[in-house]
Length: 192
Length: 192
DNA sequence: ATGCTAAACTAACAAACGTTAGGTTGTTTA
DNA sequence: TAAACAACCTAACGTTTGTTAGTTTAGCAT
Image 1 (cartoon, rainbow over the protein chains, first blue to last red):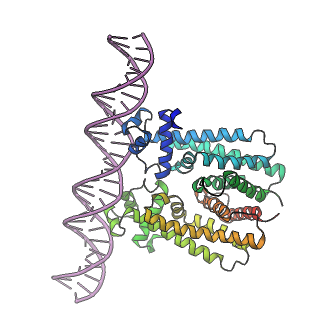
Image 2 (cartoon, rainbow over the protein chains, first blue to last red):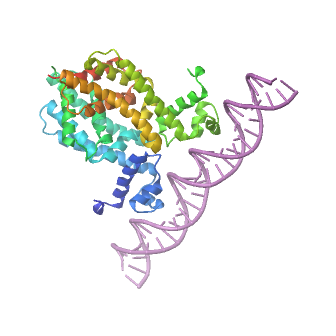
Image 3 (cartoon, chains in turn cyan, green, blue, purple):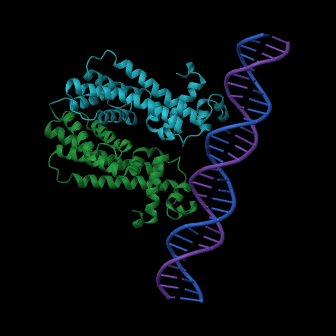
């Protein structure tokens, strides 16, 4: 895995793991360096500060999420199919890179104001993609919802939350979980 | 508000606010003391350590949540009515004391092993109360679900998440949010 | 008044932290 | 071969941290 990664990428990956374990303020650069196979001070050859590592991690993850969700939605004809794909994607992505996504979900408060605004802007874009699906479902299919934002938040929380408890060796596969949650939301929204 | 609280309770309340703002490792006892109206060292007259403050906060909150949820469920005849009340309670409680509940939801990793086990045990009890509602709904009413745990987690994440974005001056009331989410779950689970 | 106790204070500790300066190594470039 | 550069190292800096020890204050019972 790590053989083809630049040291910069190794540091970012190990930072995601460490920050997820102990939180950003609870993590220190000496341990991060140790995990990345270098000494403490050497991190500053790649990053200007601890804060920059957190920002790069979150900003990069949000950009990637927006791009990949958009890809996944192309070719989905109906809002219903789009919703299913969004649920599936959000869960899969959170489980594929649980460290990066958990950081991005939970460390917003530790970003300095300038960085905070940038990441929140991208988070809002992602959320709006899902809101647009819900709005389309309401307009075209008569889904039973008033405030799309209410449901995009529900989707993001319940699907993103999977990363906090999912175990690969558990009884449920990712596909099963994604299907169950997609069914729950679709049945909950569709007119009876 | 604070006139009738013991200093110990003031410290706990301010700790909840501070820990929610900056996280447990990002908070320091001098600032906590300042907010509680005393000096740094004086905290140790009430608490043995920073860790004990976090533990008391989380343990107390979990006990209270279990007790109040149980109260709220008594007298609810059907699983459907129980589910609605659980959704309502979980949202209301998270918004009434957003600091305490957000800490309890997010700072588990910062508990020392012994304390961790105690709090997780109570969290599991709370989760099982909700699982039991879902199991009863399946057995008695034919709700469309396989793994109750999957849905208790969904409920807890989406309803607890409300505390992260709810604004009292916003357009939606607590009652409206609770109703929308209860409808979503009930319609999603009920047989069509 | 005296002594007792709870509750707060001040000041300092040792450790850990982010960060920086300056040196060493090894590879590429002219 | 020499110069240049990137990558990493070591060692230290100033600050902040949780925590402790010893002291002062205020209220209450004797």
